[in-house]
Length: 99
Image 1 (cartoon, rainbow, N blue to C red):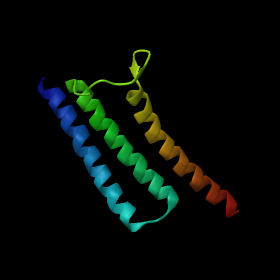
Image 2 (cartoon, rainbow, N blue to C red):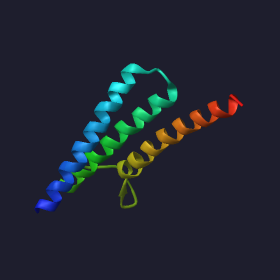
Image 3 (tube, one colour):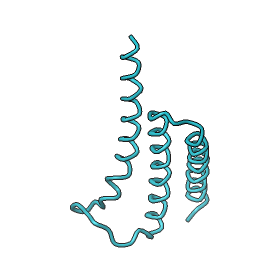
């Protein structure tokens, strides 16, 4: 592993941890459904980052696969995006109702 890969891993873990930390701090201060979904999406993004780094090191273990693609590799990116979509839909519906 060269210095570029180490920098890549450390930067992804650091920025993801900061985002997850501040998201959890926000979660404790708000009960708004849209913001809670954004927080869960941010935490899911960090879980995806940790999973991808563990996968780079070959520490993923046996997995359920669809064809040659592990189900977790399909689920994690779409889970994060799904939470963000749900949050945005809630925000759009609120804005449309106030008109």
